Length: 105
Ligand SMILES: [Zn+2]
Image (tube, rainbow, N blue to C red):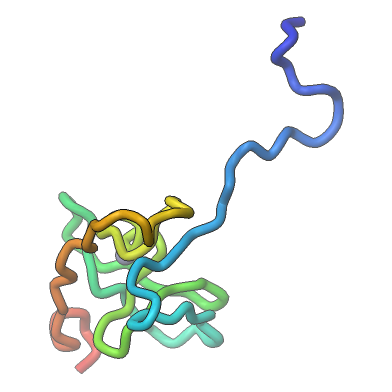
């Protein structure tokens, strides 16, 4: 056994799972409280579908767009950089998807 192996018991938790919203005045974190169909307004590159948000899922909403946390991180709306406010980086543009494109009309 090497010195770096975890001791018996639960595995070590090495990940700092905290996330930070760069534009904190624009976005709010929401817990989806039902199972009605609601879609993330962004797609991952190479994907041809929108992400279905499910009951209990935490997502971001700025009043115009809703983002799953994966897309929020990918587009730079969310960051793991605790000192993000000290750096000048803007999130990438979120392409707003009309409701008709995600089957909501
Ligand atoms: Zn998404």
